[in-house]
Length: 163
Image (cartoon, rainbow, N blue to C red; front, side, top):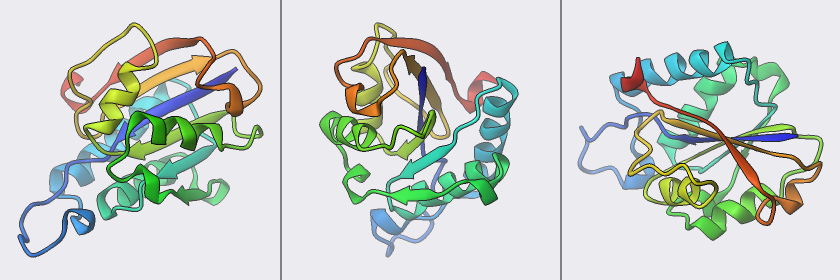
């Protein structure tokens, strides 16, 4: 069985209007909520062994926060430019490129693509994955290469305002 955690980056700062969207950092709320959500996921007994992120500053920082909670010395962060302003197809392609040694993949990216992708996976639907939100599915297969055409099971959807 494989597990996919779809994580929206934590809340970002809009304080500096000169920064490009790509370069926006996390704000204080984001720096607080991201580790809280990582701990909530860890408390569920879900432990990602692979991390893939958009290279945008806020997504990369969110990934690093999650990695620290899960023991970053054992984890490697893969940055995929195609996950910035991604379509559902970009997400499917990213997941299907994963090596089969990875059993639980944490994928960190942005809206609206991340919500569209999550809604394409199971019957569970959401209008929005909020910042630091985590949408999880599993599928009975040994290969990520079969992800798109495999039947997926909704596991949970959690976000900071749930707590």
